[in-house]
Image 1 (cartoon, one colour):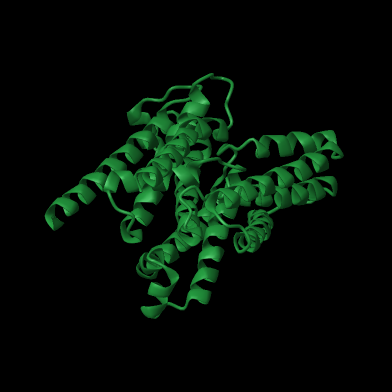
Image 2: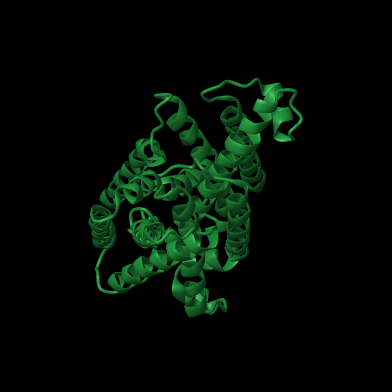
Length: 341
């Protein structure tokens, strides 16, 4: 049995890595101007004979591709942590309104800075997004102690998202025209416009937070079996829950700050990984979710750019098409299991 399980894990990770590499190169070669695989490879190192290829790869496509990888992985891990925290299979940054809260605070910050001619740094954007995520997360935690079942918690999260979106739209209504254009482009969700400085900030936040989440895999596995069980194994539940809140909020905030709201990836990818690997062990699912989230977001970004080129779709439009059916299947499966019970 152990050998069979190890073989399945190895095959699963091999498949994910291959898909990630394939979508990585497809994103580099496909676009308004097609580039050969050889030119794209040399362009990564700035050694293509054609200088325009070097510029396209290094300044536009490569940063965007890396952003899709990092932010897709961050969103997936954030979703998995939230699902473990609430014991809720369809908990995620987008559904629970956490992304909407981050979007609201970032929108307010952007409008204020644009109105006063202030140039925002990446650190300020992430901080504003993090504050918004924490506010929404805190509200959800307060509500979770008063509601009786999963459905009520999800509905409460959706309502919080609607409230935050409504306030955001109200603020945009009274903003200057130039501010509205900038905010609208960001709020639709996109990995475009990423530069090297943004990538450095993403790398620091996402890699460190993901590594911290992986280091929590053992206590997280115990927590999945119940708070009492985890406490008997020596897990400080209060501190552990605070760390989960911090990491999940920071990861989702980083995504919202740089790419705007991205829907359903945080819910769908962890469940796809559980089905692929046949386990919910954090030691397996956390790295699998990161790689799977990277592959899914690169695939969706490629579709968003190429489907109706030169018109580009928002990333959330594409992720919703793939993610929403997964959520529906999860709910149907749970209802079927309850019916059998």
